[in-house]
Picture 1: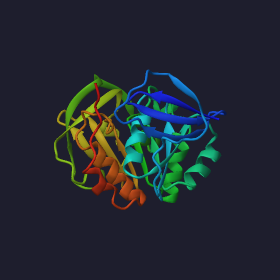
Picture 2: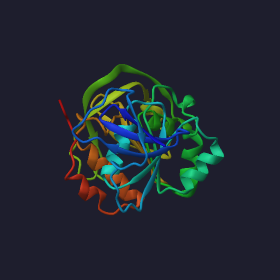
Picture 3: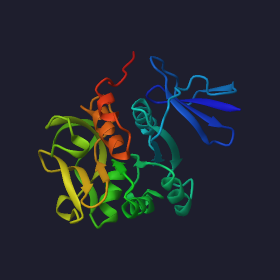
Picture 4: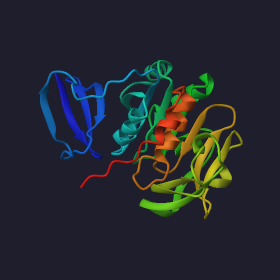
Length: 263
């Protein structure tokens, strides 16, 4: 039996009885109450089927936006597997990552110390040159694990927008500079503590670190939320990252996509 649950952003998630994620799909043009369920569906007949070759392991840090991120990735042509940050042990997480083309570490309400398997997965990705993208908490964890300091931000940013300046290239290829980004965070990476192995790729005008990349491995982090409807170029950034993961044409496909807003 497959159960269908509705998530913020109009996203349908299909799970087996044991809770294992079976598939997820954007509920185009439709919204469901948070937490509602539709039981009795024997197969994921409403799921978008595609000839997918790139698989992304998404680590959910208990964040309400994770399935919006999943939706963007799948719309761009990727296949996703979602696990909670404490659902499996480190060895199992590394084994799962090894079976995927990329790893995305989601936002979350906690601190890097509470990010569970995100920490060993960052080290695994560095060692194996596995593409990895950390968003918000994932970005902070990327900085901290290499010696950076994550501290309380000077200004709390929850659902607020800022202009972000970036170095053209990598995740930001084809994205204007500056661009508008939506921020949900009370912690941030202290700029002076960014370790030598990481390069700052994006910042706000007042000096808050908004983007990081590893100098010797395909590891990236963004402090803002690319999946927000108010973030400019969110699809393009994720398309660029999927290109790094090996999904040809993802950046080009992003040009035809925009966030779905319904009344």
